[in-house]
Length: 268
Image (tube, rainbow, N blue to C red; front, side, top):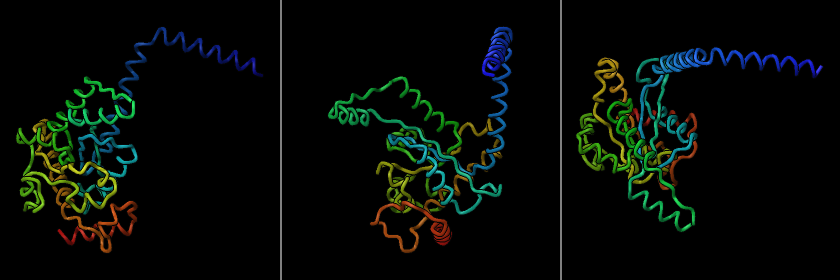
């Protein structure tokens, strides 16, 4: 009967209200620790599945689907299971951060359409702090960056020489530490990469200064995996039959994956 259900629900709600009144703080504290344990356990269980971490910082705003595509692209690029856990795993982090010049240019465009561009200065400052934190103590060693943020780190000596990792400096390198992404076959082939600004550079930071606090052995192993990724990126060549003029590849099948991996291995 409907009225019986209503009476039952009313009793339940009264009980919950009474319980919350008497045990609100105890419940909040227990819930906090329960959530913390679940999140920490999940991160601990999934951590070993990630071979490499890659960071993007610049004006491009990634959609969730693009982040997934980036991680798939990185895993397809990997020549093997770097950390030996039985499967390839890549994690991609994007920090959307505009320079003052980019903000002004964007404002000019929005003014033409009549849609005012609202910039939260505090948010921009927090985002820049997030970038600095990632460079100082983050897990990402291979980076895709807007030139402005690349130069910011370069001034403090934060980048690794390409020759130290690759054994040579690519002839199309922008400097000793970076290459424009669009000048690499890797950057031209994958759609999600070809969609980034043309001046995006790829580089690798020196080992995090916070590595000592995380454990030297584990940090060195993680950094070695990033070195492997960088070598695989520069060893990547177009699959047989692919014509760059046709544009970036939009659909990479299993056969294409095998072909690109074989090609990269051969180049290495």
